[in-house]
Amino acid sequence: MTLIDLANPTKFLSLTARVLPWLTGATAIFLLVGFYQAAMAPDDYQQGATAKIMFVHVPNAWLAMFVWGVMSVAALGTLVWRHPLADVAAKAATPIGAAFTFLALVTGSLWGRPMWGTYWEWDARMTSVLILFLMYLGLMALWRAVDDPSRAARAAAVLTLVGALNLPIIKFSVDWWNTLHQPAAVLRMGGTSLDKAFLIPLLVMAVGFSLLFVTLHLAAMRNEILRRRVRSLQMMQASQQAA
Amino acid sequence: MSLGPHASFIVTSYALVAAIVLILIGWIAIDYRRQKERLRELEASGVTRRSGRQATDI
Image (cartoon, rainbow over all chains, first blue to last red; front, side, top):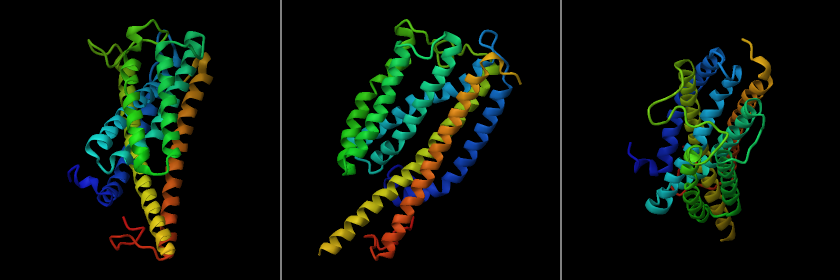
């Protein structure tokens, strides 16, 4: 099945129906193993057990940016290739990305209080992630404000691509400015600085949360396709009644 | 397993993640049922898709 085949919503729904049970199972397995490994991970020599917050904070922070990246590709799909499912993908991803970003902010705050002595600091990393969260909320409001999905899609695509400029700022904020937030420990030049005892549970959790995103995203896309089918049938019904 | 003096921060973080993930799952599942229900109602009222298939067909 090619990308062109998936442009047909009916074929996409059929693929989703086949794939979703497997994805749900894989997500559950990875998350269960990840949570177990996180519980069993040793205490950090400086942070003690508080380092366990990393296993939920970091995957959510990665996904906060990754989901916006997915939405940016979908935005290009809407504006450049006019792929019929691109705006469905973008719209369905928005609330999921907002949830991951919210979790990254709150778990980061809960990690920061015992480690830095404060829940919040207006530094570059935290502020840029807060801006990302506000952009997610703005996009959700935009999708709800415009009734016609194709008009909403174009406006949302432009806003998404403008918002993508924030992604490198978030990633490199810890290198460009003085910040309380620690620099990258996993994805960095010269390899990871994390010990295997922390790295393996973190990667398992990252895979688990990524699978969770894919599962929820496909399910939300399926819902959006059905919602559009409802809308077009309601319009047909209204025109039949008017005739 | 001892979570040390900052146990409340750790437990709150994990509980919050679990709660938000469950809310997301619940919201998507309810939305799916709602759309299927609307399609069933439209089908019952006699509206058909241009392809001739039933509204609830995937």
